[in-house]
Picture 1 (spheres, rainbow, N blue to C red):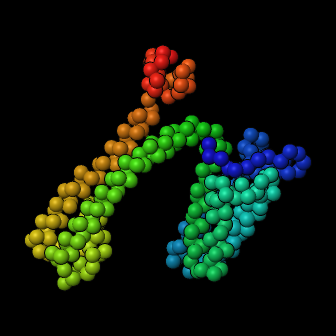
Picture 2: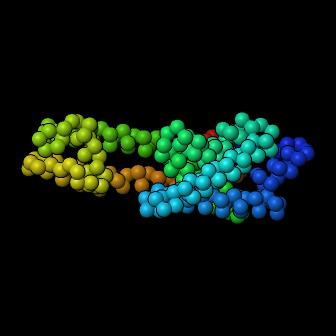
Amino acid sequence: MISEGKESPLAGWRKRLYEIVFEAETTAGKAFDIVVIWLILISVAVVLLESVKSIREDYGDILFVAEWFFTILFSVEYLLRLVSVRRPLRYIFSFYGMIDLLAIAPTYVSLFIPGTHYLLTIRILRLLRIFRIMKLTEYVSEGKVITGALKASQRKISVFLLAVLTIVTVFGSLIYVIEGEEHGFTSIPTSIYWAIVTLTTVGYGDLSPQTPLGKTLASIIMIMGYAIIAVPTGIVTAELTRSNKAYSTERCPECNAQDHDADAVFCKHCAARL
């Protein structure tokens, strides 16, 4: 599980409060979490409805009040979490602590920057706690496998993205020279945008080459796109396959290494017999 950056107080009312707002083992704690989940879902639905013009015109005032009602409730909940932990700063900068803060911040920010309250949909991220509440820890472990595969692929993906960036820069410059401003390619950055859209086979259609040479270049980029899109998928899939491989927990008596295959007889680091 992802750490919430919390430590239980030693005793007293803060310990009881901690058990309610953080723990899902007790009846009160589970009930509290379930109520919070329903409040999250309803509050996100309020934001979604408020973004619909016809609904906003008819029920704007009610939705505005509801939005502030939920924000105040979540603000009180956030303060309760801070009070109940031994080290509030550690919780504030933890994964869940940051999400809890971001879940209430947009409403207050909207007082100064209109429209930012629509970012309250970030509250949906708080539903990640449902894995802990509903005892779905096996899903969390599977999530760690995916996260591990992505981290293991990081350097390969970085090299791949650098290569793609180089390709779109070159092709963007070429199409800018070939088509020119009269066909909508007003600058190299705009042409690079077109190359990215074409290479990824998205094809918005806002820009398109008009000359035969430009269309030929576009065809080349499209064909390259099909090949390039498969590369990151293959990299991550290979890492997922590797992460699902069975490993032994036995340590090497010589070098103390532990990451051996399940059927290994000798250490792959120092060749000592296991």
